[in-house]
Amino acid sequence: MTSVPRARQGRRMDGAAAISLRGAALSYGDRTVWSGLELDVHPGEFVAVLGPNGAGKTSFVRALLGRQPLSAGTLTVFGRPPRAASRDIGYVPQQAALSAQSMLRARDLVRFGIDGHRFGPRLRAAAVRRRVDEILESVGASAYADVPLGLLSGGERRRVRIGQALATDPRILLCDEPLLSLDLHHQRAVTGLVDARRRSHGTAVVFVTHEINPVLGLVDRVLYLAGSGHRVGTPEQVLTSESLSELYGTRVDVVRVHGRVVVVGAPDEPATPPPHTHETRDTRETDGVRP
Amino acid sequence: MTLADGIWHQIFSFDNYGELLTLVRNSLIAGAALGLIGGLAGVFVIMRDLPFAVHGISELSFAGASAALLLGTNVVAGSITGSLLAAGAIGVLGARARDRNSVIGILMPFGLGLGVLFLALYKGRAANKFGLLTGQIVAVDTPQTTWLLGTSAVVLVALVVMWRPLSFASADPDVAEARGVPVRGLSIAFMLVLGLAIALSVQVVGALLVLTLVVTPAAAAARVTASPVLLPLLSTVFAVISIEGGILLALGSSIPISPYVTTISFTIYAVCRLVGKYRTRRPGARRTVPQPA
Image (cartoon, each protein chain N blue to C red):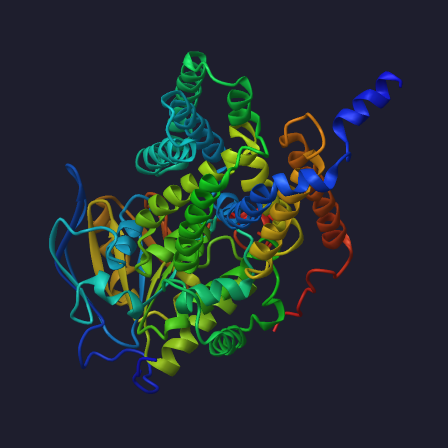
């Protein structure tokens, strides 16, 4: 297992950056998704990536995973190209990424995270099994370790996904919309797991989300992507009427109510949870895998 | 003897069974090997949603086999050639499911058409022609058995080597790719392995009924277990039972082997479906709802 820094609290700007983007740009043909991106994500730092649909959040994730080459600039993960650093990045994919035909149990998904990329028969099966049990325990998923994923609720499946992502003891946790279609209770459970990991292991967290409020108390910085440009900074710097109005080129009001941020007037209003979110039950149908 | 008795005797006849049994020794050996690789490959056919591809490849395999028959060369080799060409084309052209189905839909009638052409030109025994489509048991002579077993061994080794990353890439392609699994390479590699497995199955159950060996047993197993160990094991056992049972029942009759194999295979699936339904419906049988922490 990789050695990890001990017990880092919150943001640390010293030392090597976990992720470093310099003049990074990404375009598909003539269409530039984002450009001139300068960002260092440090170990133990929690960075939320916000922005409306089509602003390049998914492309950002793909670039970090080395699946989408930049059209300009550089992107390094611990000083290496992202493809070479795949063990260092724990990836929690968006929902519905599982094949509906797969007959997997929770523990199988976690085991993939440990040694699914290796060819040949599995050696040291007992050790792997113990490790799977440890991981499931650490994300509170032991109770349904042997249940097929199709029978799990969205919140349970998200816990298993986080376990899978942590299987290699990664130094970066990359979560793509992990709160989508979860109720408040499960949102807290998921953000709690991610934050606990960051605090205990100094794991850098890149958290792509539509809703800033569930993680507002945890984020150190925000990368706000909009079609016209982007902003990087603390939530207090970026999530203001001036900053977002300038970014969108139209009048946008940012209101803070009871510790929550509400953005009014932005196309797609990414910082505001859709009105139905809190009523949404943590249903099985919403998570892409049919039982 | 009434008509019904006559039909019954055609379907099930065990006269001189002991003597006949020695004739199909090769078939029984080949059947065991086919059951093994059909059952194993089937697990991924289900996971990757490839039943239509299996059918498409088997038609091209039929074309290759009938070309070999016409030219008087090795039928198994012809069948393998057709299979690999089809599997390669589907693998390369049809990475996405939607493209794949159109590619298969285009290749399949072309393959069948070629096969029909070659068989029409062929002047040999009619039973040889029919056998390629609907299966035959005494088709397997000793040199062919060697071919079948050799190719089965290749398929088996390939499946064992790529089992883990292929499972990962099949079930969870996004994360697999992020972890550096060669998802696309594995997809093409699996299509080729599947092509070999299909070419072998064509020899015994015929091109039209390959699905019964490569899809049904795995689908049946998936109904009763989600364990990554039990699933391939059960799938293999089901496939071997179907094919060996089919050979043994078909032995004394004048009917091709395929209806026996398909019926056994289908019965196993039906039973597994019922068992699976019962197990999910029974309260608390497959999962208990944990209390929120």
